Image 1 (tube, rainbow, N blue to C red):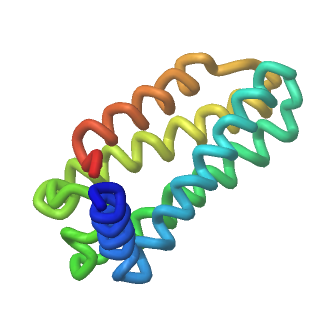
Image 2 (cartoon, helix red, strand yellow; image 1 turned 45 degrees about the vertical axis):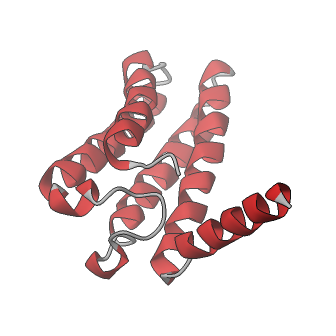
Length: 137
């Protein structure tokens, strides 16, 4: 019986996260960005510079699109904390810094060099935003 209650609560919780269409879209986009960033890191390691440039520029655009997927009416839905909307300017700056790191990697790829600082910035941006703006449940 306890397992049934837990499953019900988890299902109800998951349904809450996808009430607003933007919530589901941004969750999917975050997953795509994570996968593409892994691919980007591998491409940098393999020195496939044209792939690095293409992937980094695509990621730049995906992060830009993310900003449109946080409409005010989706506040309180999904795993995003209300801090996103309460501190929108800071959130937007963090997202723009994340975007700039992808642009820096793309520019380095044109010169066929690795930009470890930008890769580190992407990784730290993910951790930082999760701490500031994402709920665990």
